[in-house]
Amino acid sequence: MRRFSGVIIASAMAGLAMHAAATQIMWNGGTDLLFSTGANWEGGVVPGASDEAKGRVGLADLIVIDSDQTITKLTGGSRSGGGYKIENGTLNVTGLYVDGNTAGADCLTVIDGGTLNVSGISRMGLGGDNDTGTTTVQLKSGVFNSADAVTVGQESTGNLEISGGTATFSGSYLWLGGDSGTTDARNGNGVLTLSGDGALNVLSGNVIVGKRLGEGTFTMNDSASAVFMNLAIGDVSFVGQEGTGAMSLLGGTLNVKSDFAVDNGSVLIDAGTLVWDGEHVADFSALVAAGDISWTNGQSMLSDSYAASWTNNAAVLFVDYDHLNAGKTTVWVSSTETMNSSVVIKGISLAMLNGTNSVVRWPSDASAKYVIQSRSNLVEGSWSNIESNIPGNDGAMVITNELTEPQAFYRIILDQFNDPTINSNSTVDIRTRARLLGYLYAEGSCANPLGDGDKFAIGVSDAQNTRALWCAQQMEEKDLLTIVSSTDSRIVLKDLPWDIPYAPVSWNTNIYMTFSEGLPHDPDNPGQWAQEVYSSQFIAALIEGEGSVDGLINDQAGWGNYTPHITEVCDLLNEPEYDCDAYLANSGKSVWIPTNTFYIVRAFEYVATGRVPGGSSGLVRASTPPEYATP
Image 1 (cartoon, rainbow, N blue to C red):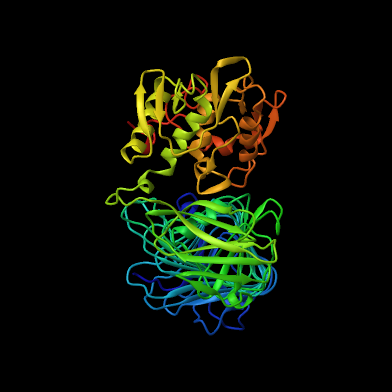
Image 2: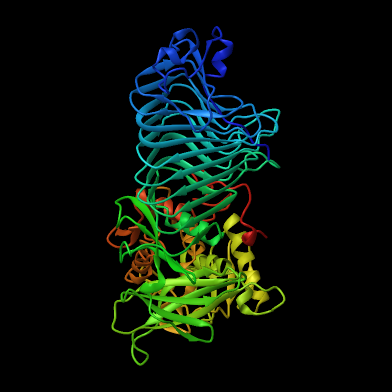
């Protein structure tokens, strides 16, 4: 990587072509180190608003700016490096170009009690070929304001160190390492360090740690604080010229207002706290699952209430929504010293965290999905789901659960294993099973039990018929059911894996309703609903067949006195897996999903055609059906 020498240039590069060249006034250091002393400058005149001030000193002697100054260009010694120290007053410059043109010369600008205002672009570490110097801007106290874009380490090494005071950047971006470039490849190294009680606010645009072909490093320590509108670690916007980034949250508080992404890099969290505006538990969990987040050591426990946690050998990573910070997602790490020693049985470990939560850990397979259940008594009661449809990751899975009883027992169930070399029932995707079960639940209320009591019909046509038949065929291949017959409007099945109670509807004794007693139950766990109802595809089938665009599942009014059929759907929609705030309507014969939560079920995988999803007033249009539901 090419490195730059350091000379500080305060100038608007684009503006140089628009304005007359500044008059260059050379520093001679004849009297003292004060910028404001005329005798220190050739000609005895202090540089003014249209002048370039050029120094001839090394790093040991910084030119001191101790009063208000406004200049066009501020240049350090090009061969010996050099720099400036702003102690009092305000320095106003059009643009900040901390640069150099001599190999090995370093440059330092220190703000310690004064104010630096930059109205144009700021670039630290601009440099040229064969330069190995390092450019550093330090804010120890005082103020650093930039009204335009800021790049640290555009092609050489640039450091921005904020240990006190407040820096506020209101331009279009802050880039650490690299640049957007056009015809050349810029491979700078940008380092941002926040420590002490330093504060950095980037109020608009993007903070990118590691821009195009660059390397970026962002570190927070102590009680420092930062507020970023958007933050990306790494840059993948240019294929083959990606930038890499690394972020270490070792202390302080980082607040991200909008978007947070790890595109090509890593994030380490220790004693710092990440606050992300909005509800982003699922988004952060995805980053953890992708291996983008690591953690160690940590801080004291911030709250006993949290949405998810992960444990490694060093500490526990927590994510919370709305408890610590209203309307925001909070992430922190606490030491495993708060966890007691674990009990391990056949690779599954159980430990207690802070005396209030259990931590269950087990090795997982990426081809599998798991269900974790608990119960307080092995003699009475039944198993209850803590979480279902958990995808494995070929590593350790960790689930933290709040303890509400004096004792608890746990078990892990292998719900699905997608090994194509094994011909077993578990190879049928739970989404396929759930989609068919949803069609049976919503559309299986016609002509049952078809005479002999063991055959069930799904009254569906067009795209619904095609998808339902495909799902049934996948299950028949695994001996989970038998397809008796199929037409364009009806599919008849028997030998189903679910217990399906049925009864004639009140207004027509020749029509029988399936699941008259409510949602299907798990045959292995009486009293618990079947695992398929917790898959989004079960609800997708209900909405596709019986829903409307305003959130009403409304085709149940003719079902007479068999209210569990609809009331248990309402209960299911309010389970943690969905949490839709659904409620009963039409005298308890329909379910409403409020508009403000309908997006939760609209986010399911819909297909391109069908009554509600993709219909004439459809909710979501997809170019093709999901792979698992494609005939």
